[in-house]
Image 1 (cartoon, rainbow, N blue to C red):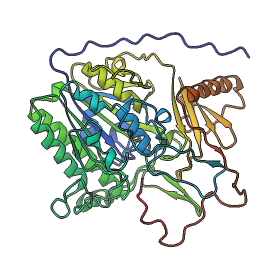
Image 2 (image 1 turned 90 degrees about the vertical axis):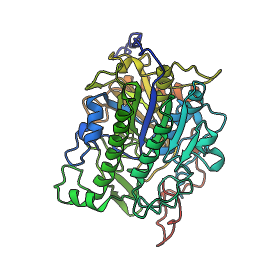
Image 3 (image 1 turned 120 degrees about the horizontal axis):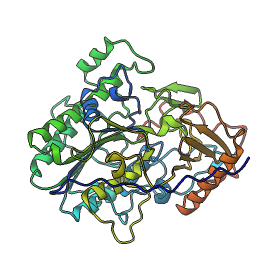
Amino acid sequence: MPPIAPPPVKVPVVPQLPAGPPPNIIVVLVDDMGWTDLGCYGSKYYETPNIDKLAQEGMRFTQAYAACTVCSPTRAAMLTGKTPARLHITDWIAGHVPDNGRLLIPKWTMQLPLEEATIAERLKTRGYATASIGKWHLGEEDFYPTKQGFDVNIGGTHAGSPPNYFSPYKIATLPDGPKDEFLSDRLTDEAVKFIEKNKAKPFFVYLPHYGVHTPIMGKPEVVAKYQAKKGVGGHSNPVYAALVESIDDSVGKLRAKLDELKLTENTLFLFTSDNGGLSHLVRPQGWSRGPTDNSPARLGKGSAYEGGVHIPLIVAWPGVVKPGSTCGVPVITYDTVPTLLAATQTPLKKDQIVDGESMLPLLGGTDTLARDAIYWHYPHYHPGSAMPYSAIREGDWKLILFHEDNHVELYNLKLDAGEVDNRAPFDSVRAMQLHDKLMAWLKDSGAQIPERNPKYDPDKPLNEPKKPGEGKKKKAE
């Protein structure tokens, strides 16, 4: 078989930006929302009219990806524009360390270093007011948002999940509200206050919701509404549905405030998730089902497959983005920083490295980016089923390299969205070329490759079953 010809050189076309002041920016980052968890992405059970309206008035991406199958690396990529592999922030903080892995987990970085240039720091050079409101999960107090370019930090700590979605929240950076106030509502109210206070200048609101992460909780009256509904497909959990609806309420309230203040026309609104939906967990006792389902994508959060990284992404920006448009070009979390910098005409810091590519050409209605591929690197173990792996997607093809034994799997996502037909044995030339390209990227990005564990015992399980009550105090991811 002859070598596969390289794709032609592509030249993206950047749209004309609106005249006048730079746009306000709102980024809503949902925790653990799967790519089918919205009405506009196909759910017939969850009700998300406000997010569906956002899609009707903006662009819905059908091939959007998280930078990682878990949260902290994606958050770091969202703020810096760098791949987690380059940052060496490659697992949720503090991660899963198996008792008996074939491979040793590399010594990775467990905070967002202050030396990194964040999007908030760059936007500050353009006069933006900046706020981080919600989950942070990128290090202890010395690495909190106010040390990373944000004027305020409301609700962000080192923790990956809230102790409670109802007040009292027990979150150090968020004073408790009235009893039973709901966390998604409170964070939204704080964002609304920040917008009102800074309406006369450009603002950047980074709203990383704790929802829809565990503990799965919802307002009783909303839960009751979904209990009266029949589940559809893998979507049938009424409490999770109520939590999803709280995020939809948030989007509706934010956009209503923009309309009220006549700021909608000059606001870029981006809505996305940090990884795939929580569909399955692998325990020593076997599989357990999560609160949602990502079908037809395979598995979910913490997996090497599409369910772990395929996410929703919606961008609305009047005057640039055509209402009701869709885009099928693969994009990834670390494209956010170059997109926002280009949208605000903000230069990179001197010597700043950005791995992403601006999505402005796509937002303007073309279907072209300069790059040929996107990449992942996860040198860790996860109870969502992931073993240490790296992956590349080029066109419709995705190759996954599993580091334990260096075997590869190759899937055509256009023909096989569920990744059940491994083509590597039948298309060895393509597999070899993608493997070589992936290895070159791993080297270029300085990715940490896990090493063999000399103490590995093949007669023991990956993780020993825990005794009753053991591990309850550990912070959830």
